[in-house]
Image (tube, rainbow, N blue to C red; front, side, top):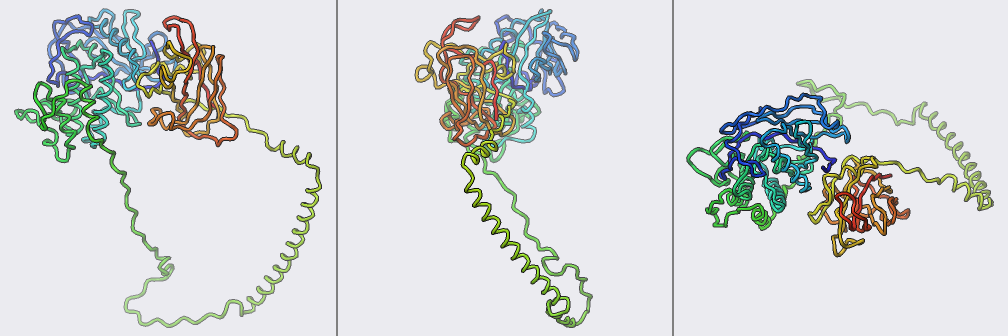
Length: 576
């Protein structure tokens, strides 16, 4: 399976099994029906349990330190229920944290879990927590996925209070677009709860457990698009009100009062954005009813995403700055430093005697003579230094020019380039069609046997205009550094490969390539390419570097990679 270098959080989400109005039937994702829902043993962070029971399947008895495939070392068991367990683990090959789902190979849902994990891995959308591996060996089935240490669950965000309108707008927009892309590929989530949505440190929302969470619990739905759309509406409702839009409490949130039905968010809490409130109702009330403005209900993520796009954009709040404290004069500035406080009842003070002029005393006269002598000596010394300088300049002008140029050349030797370490990377696909996002870590792991590879195309070698504008990877150097060049090892040779380097503003650049500052560009017909910035150009300082490929050679079929115009990157290094 493909591998991805970024990391992530994934704790099995057990709370609120049936919070949505869309009823789900008990079956695995590949269609094998089950007789009853499997009971779930909830972890300390759950909010509810499942109903029904079937013959329990014992979870694999593994322990911390156990190693899978001589690579994934189990560290901490996060959840253990219904015959499967979830772990935080370490990928010792790539030295990164990962998450692992484990269940016995004879578990009734093991086939479904493998199928769901492999389908999810093929999606390769960076808006989802990526599946890195799905394997059956030694009577075990395990699924390896990203672990995002900098991400926070929506559950934790809502525990602190409702979200600001701009943040709630970003939530529903990003989740609706992500689920639209998933359903376009035939994938559904079916357990889209606050615990399945993560907010990264960059403000992006990512969804975990696509298809896999439902497969682990044997959940399916007759109308999966409606189920996921209603779930997005519930997330938006909770973000606006800090209440769960059903009578039962779930995910640390209080439910609505019993018997009142579904109330619009702006009627639950004052100050709720009217447009977002109506949008939540259009997603939740999708059984033929309509929202307050008689708008049609949203029954698919695509319809919901279009409704979000039709809204006036909600701008982020203006930053607030604390007013500086009033300027306080100190007692020294007020002229009373070192003076004792006035005694109560003191009369008029006596005027102080006027001191004599500073230089009229005997000491002052001696000081004047001393200063005069020093000034005369300084003038004489300065005149001598000026004459000496003029003589030196005359001698320098008479020195042959060849000697001067030789000396200057010795002092102006260029300094050696410094290698810059890559901390993380993410594929850049402005057209929404990534190449191999889950395997981007192989492009800088210093292992010549691993590589990141593009898809194969019929047209080439130039991408534009028949294929796309280009493909690329954004590399994170950890902090802002001056970038002077790069050395790139390529998988395929041939005529020809064109690559340029640009300074980006983040791992997910906000603007097009044309708006970025170019660092270097080059073209090669071999398997290596060294890029260097122009000597006449100013050095570029940036934390994020975009490697942008706009042409690649034709190569024959290799394994599962079809013949066509394609390229692979074995290793990338930067210098500054």
